[in-house]
Image 1 (tube, rainbow, N blue to C red):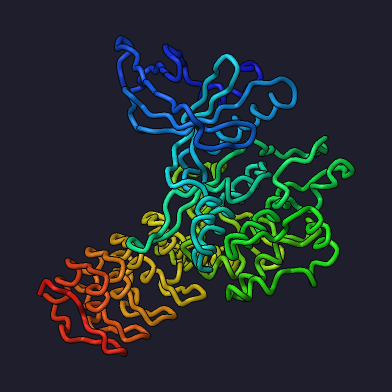
Image 2: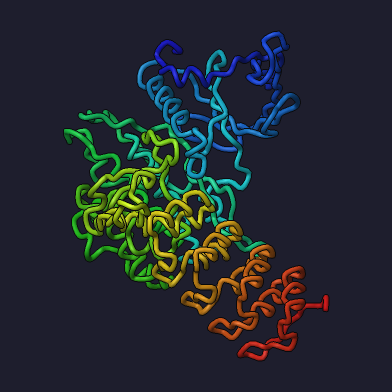
Length: 523
């Protein structure tokens, strides 16, 4: 088997021994130790029962008993070794997992920790995500609010965009293959963070893609053309991924199946306008933008669906900017920035591939013989649209670079969020300081009427609260419901922030429009 693997996949193989049943020992040459040093042993113990099943195999939890430098637990997918098609599938899975285990992809994909062989099986070690998968979460919880669903969809979409750009299709997008790194709780509000997993039937795309001999995928999430793949000359697998994302988004929003059977898929294919489930989405008060997004992914004809690049620019995705981080591009040769940039057309998706932001001219260059540089409109658009995502991701260097290239300090998303508002809400103190030094509006308000200070107080970002107060932020600013920073800090139990606000002179007797006073008890 090893002779058939690409070099980069062979490099991920772990030298392994099996001293006892369910015991695994890996042997490492430490890169930080001198050549004369002993090799490091890493010992693992596997649970007896599987914790799950993925494409073509079972998943076991393993616990490190000694020697680990980074992880105490890992999930190990065990795939029975076979010949022929089965062998090609697990080689493909290894290739895909290794490809997307690079650190720059870690926000979007479950990371591989290496692989090893046993007598009758291939074992792929992955980072362990104890929160579990999205399917289990949906089963045990009520339907998610639209904003939560949008975060999840956007992150899966960005993972797909990376795969498609690199010439891969996932081919099994569904909630079971979306693992939850973190999620908000009633006591700990916050953002969602999900990762794509299970590349067992992923496919590297080629110039001519031959048809498969069997239908591969999960029926509920399969695009119509996949049921005819034996009779079609080729399949647009990225377009099939987008269909599956639409079906998954519907399930996350409604907790119901859009296509209970293959028959329902065929019926929808012939009458998409009349059979689109507006009623179900209306029952959950899903916005028109959200419904339009799903419809755009679920066109019966593959070439009419939004591709991943165009979907990122859809209003529903863009209206919640934290869910639209920049996509890393490992094909760039720039040492300053690893992110490729692309211009998007609202209807057709990507239209022009442009250079890295580092290659753009400065908005204004100084010097005795230098005139101000006029940035081409499409490049300026690129600069403007990337500032908010860079702020949300906490990428200080990227933010500084974008500002140097002429990005608008007060650029807003569809809900009125400016870069400073987002930096305050996310707790990115250094970025907030940079924006303030550049002259950002200290009292900017988003759609709910909240200022940067209000958001910093709500999210308990004490350092940002202190910074904003030092810059002269309005202590008594009120949001649309009449809540001040002190009221929010007190209500949420953020004692240190409340104390800081009181020290700066916040009104201890402030009340909101409903006459709800503070409950801070530390005065």
